[in-house]
Length: 410
Ligand code: ADP
Ligand code: ASP
Ligand code: MG
Image (cartoon, rainbow, N blue to C red; front, side, top):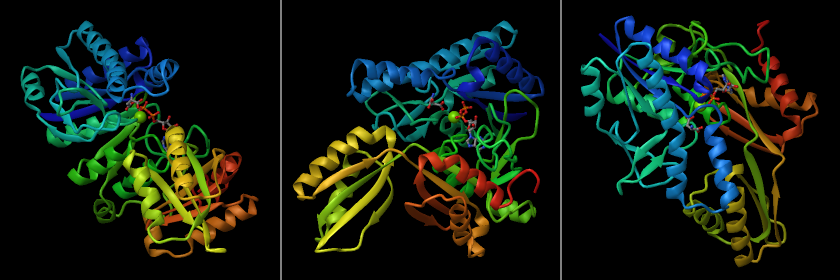
């Protein structure tokens, strides 16, 4: 009997009708002769709504209480989904993250899974139960509830699949797979049949929210093959697997696999800093200490012994970053700090880039022809990203999608 981990995202359990559709799908999988462990997210926009409510109470909520609040969303889903499965006559039991034996570190709101003790889940499977686990939550060493960062139910699913040595890990969403770019934004986007972990990691990390990037990291580390597919149709979705497997089976390996965009960034520039050794270490050390992730960094040339440093951070960290950077800039006697929140990052991603020079030039040419100004460029082995004005995003993404031959007509 195969063991299948099925994960349903918030859009799949947004209302009670959808919950019933999900319940039927789970039962069908069980009736096909599988043992089934389900991971589920909070219904619809519940997590966003909870964050908004907290913000109306305080701009500085204690992180522990924030996790207490956020974890409630997934508990609504496990209870309602289990009721639906029970009402359809199947044996089922729901579990919170802690009840499922998921343990994480002490970092509230973005905890890392440290260990999973699967005994309780295994016991319930052996009793022929469908097990419905709340995604996104775990227990920390103090015995408090923590959450695993936005999109964290994907991580719960992959980590459980790895621990339980599941035969498959299916991630169900409102799209039927991974597309060459966001199909809700570019109608011409094409579904990808197979994508390797590294490309998926870069896509997830640069704006394609369809999978959480840490879940892809864990999938790669433990060799968990993910099938990304739709809750609402039976189509074959996208398989996320190793580069070796894709090459071995001679499956498609185009030059560019996808185009992503991310409007979640803000750019800070500290102007007229003294050009002294250890400056970058001081600034970014301080920012890292308060748990803020920096993405792209650029330092200007020295003029009159002064430099400017620009970097991008997540919009959600904007207030905290601004406070810390204002402090650092006055300590270092910089002239001023400028924050630009009308920027976006667009990226082209593809393992084909490793062996094909010239992709960057092609990208810049396409953007230039569309009159899109590039503010900052950053690259990795399989990704080129540009920071541009957020108002140019749609035309830039459409032009790149077409320019790199990703449209349906190709
Ligand atoms: P869930 O609620 O199931 O977790 P998400 O909203 O987190 O789903 O992710 C699914 C969404 O990701 C889709 O509705 C789609 O708009 C978006 N998305 C962004 N980029 C892509 C892409 N390249 N391929 C597929 N979906 C994408
Ligand atoms: N509910 C959480 C979020 O919205 C976790 C998830 O959906 O994966 O981020
Ligand atoms: Mg998601």
